[in-house]
Amino acid sequence: MDLFELLNFYVIPGIVLGSIYALGAVGITLIFAILRYAHLAHGDLATFGAFVALACVTGVGVPPLAALPVAILVTAAVAVGIDKVFYEHLRERPKIVTVMASLGIALMLRSVVQVVWGVDTETYSRGIVRPEDYFGLRIRDRELYTVAALIFLVGGLQLFLTRSKWGKAMRAMSDNPNLALLSGIDNKKVVMLTWVIAGGLCAASGFFLGYNTEIKSMMGWHMLLPMFAAAILGGVGRVEGAVLGGLIVGIAEELSVLVIPSEYKAAMAFAILLFMLLVRPTGLLKGKVL
Amino acid sequence: MELLGLVNYALFTAIFIAIYALLALGLNIQWGFAGLFNAGIAGFFAVGAYTSAVLSTPADDGRLGGFDLHFVIGWIGAMLAAALVAWPIGKICLRFRSDYLAIASIGVAEIIRLVIKSEEVLTNGARGINGIPRPAGDIGYTESQIAYLVIVLAVLIVAYVLVERQFNAPWGRMMRAIRDNEHAAKAMGKDVEFRRLEAFIFGAALMGLGGALFAHFNRSITPEAIDPMVATFLVWIMLILGGSGNNRGAILGAAVVWIIWSVSEIATDRLPHEYAIQAKYIRLFLIGLMLQLVLRFRPEGLLPEPLRGDLRGSRRTTKSGADHT
Image (cartoon, rainbow over all chains, first blue to last red; front, side, top):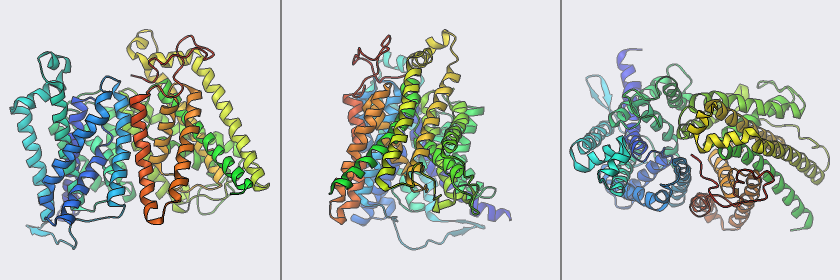
């Protein structure tokens, strides 16, 4: 196998898949760091976002990329709503109770998708798109958009977290919640902001998974493990770590079919997760360990 | 419906409740005693079911085994296999907060599902394993159902007595101490990680046994026999609704939730065909919602955890039942 074959069939799909995981993992890492629990409904929230975009595409007839902002806004609003209705009153209880509640939310979100949109496999647009040739590298437009969206969204998030007042407040809550509360940071606003960001990124992640492959009601649940593996691999609480982790998990999954049977591709994320917990639970970029 | 059909249905329901009660007891050891979040119940269930199936079926060319052993050996094997799967996961994840175990247990269930689907040599792939011997299975239908119910109930009672004894024994008190205040327990010289691992493994073994009982009841086991997410979730809601930390609560929860679940199935089966598929998902939505409501309005469950010094469970308080750290 020559280098171009390796790049075209394994590395490029790996980077695209990794970008999709990274979008979700950033939300997971933020929730883990600021609210301090593992949000198990993240995958199904991504599915929900993908189906909202589908509703725009089939209902209004806009091109898929134009449906993305709508999906992001709707999913962010739904994420805030779920937090208000189901998670907020559990805040004083041990965090693991919220983890349990989020497992229930995962089931509820999925059944909403299945009732409203059914269980059939859908696509945003029909027909086969041939990849363009860039000096021997074969890349589809949609793959470029996926990576561009990751850079744009996460770059914007980084600017927000480092430069703006509310971004700094979020980082303060993550570093030391007691100190942050003492210095007068409004916890409610920080929590809401976290959900807006996590929900929006979730929708983007689900949308691009559907855009590059197909839209299925179970697709988000199957993304949950890779997204958590990415967040832990990069270091919990580190946005750039989640991106790095996402890319590594994505590429590792695609490359794994070279050495193990392709049925076990999904096991790769789990192997990475266990390995990191075993040797370096703080992750590559020194995150938190809860 | 004629009387015999009704009796058969009741027997069928009772056997299922007993099997689910066993799973809920296993989860109670993990969550109720030790505060460990296991979201991969279906995985341990499947390991038990397949292990017992392989051990007790007659020899088959297409796959490993069967070894044609007595079903009791199959059931013991199921418990051992489930415990063996739980061990490495617990070993790696129990050093951290329970969130990590939650994620890893989802992963383990997923991997077990993949293995069952793709390792034909081990599990006969999608066709599953048939012809699993059922204890007292060669008499008439109703009689054999009754006989199996008696066996399952006997297993459940033995499990209940053993778990209840442990709950009141020093071991159970120590587990609750670790659950409620890990640092204090550590300061008292308890080996927190090892004790949690014990609880995780014991619980997993009971779940494996539940799987084995299910496989022998159905006489077959296929990858599609149970929906992993639904089974896992049902056991969780059984324990939370019944009262986590209370073994009788776990059994009561199993009965209540399974009856609600199967009655709702009867109700949705009567709907016209075009709504039937959607109704299935609406039921899933409703059990998800039920968990949220229980967590919000009655977190201690129907039968709250008996508090300290309460050996016979006579003095119950409704305070601080289900909250674990």
